[in-house]
Structure formats: structure tokens, C-alpha cells
Image (cartoon, rainbow, N blue to C red; front, top):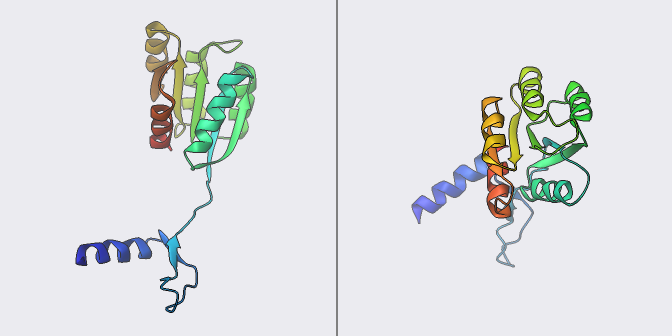
Length: 155
């Protein structure tokens, strides 16, 4: 019990809980988990459609991303990178103008703190992305729940 109280006190000090004005008569202690607004930024580089929409939903599911920028191709991605260094970039290897290794190198040169996750169709694309600086590469078909965990760990 003492251990739980100490953990609760530490969480309260760190801002993990906030006062919501409870009352002693209702038994409500007046505390609830603090809700932080998502503040991370993300960039999705993928063709418009189901894959991009799904990636957007998965990033939102992390609860950490407040702004998601989208690019259809390499040129659009480079224009966005010039204006915004996102915390995470998710790149599909099948984008128009799809020189993903060059795009990765540019992202890492201009925004070295940006974590890059690449969706590859095969092992060769996976190797190319890793050698170009991808933080994580996954083969398409990777389970959505694990992808959310992976994205969350990058943020």
C-alpha cells in the first residue's frame, strides 16, 4: 500500500494526475489522469488511398500526434521537409518518384532528429532503406497493433 501511495505521489508531482474538484461526500478524490494534448508532428509519404488513410489512423491511435502532414511523392515530401521537421516520418517505398533511399538521406541531413519508419515490399527494399538511414523498416502486412506500438516508441 505504501508503495502505491509513493507511486501515486510521484505521478501527481510529475503532472500525470490533475485536480478535477471532487468532494469527500461523494467519495470522489477529485483526481483524474491528466490529459495531455498530442503535440508530436508526423509526415506520411504515400499515395492517396487506403494505405495513407490507414497510416493516418494508426498515427492518431498513438495519442501522441497532433499534426500530420501528407505528401504524395518525393518532390512534395522534400517541400514539406524544408518547412517542417516532423518527429516521425512514415515512408512507403511505392511512391511516385520513389527514390526512398535518397529521400531518407535528405530527411536525415535536414532533420536529423526525425525518426523514419519505412514500409517495404520486400527484403531488398528493406536493406536499402536501412542502409540509407531508416530507423525502422517493416514489410507491408506487418500487424496494425504492432505498427502502432512501433510508431509510439518512435515518438
